[in-house]
Image (cartoon, rainbow, N blue to C red; front, side):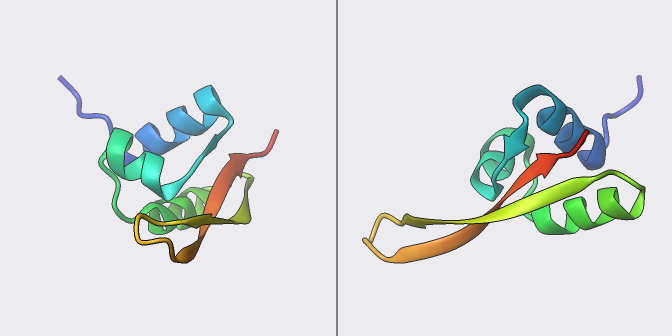
Length: 72
């Protein structure tokens, strides 16, 4: 049985959901370094864009993170 790679899990999530965030990747894909995986996918030729978003963490601090989108 072949194992699904981290890159394939991220790519499938992008295709199915349209976008993913680092929090989604940690909780659902087991990827704690989403930006590195995105870098590799871009290097492989995939058109992935990002948008910086802001939110509050559980301590009330404003945090920034990237949300990634798969271009068509």
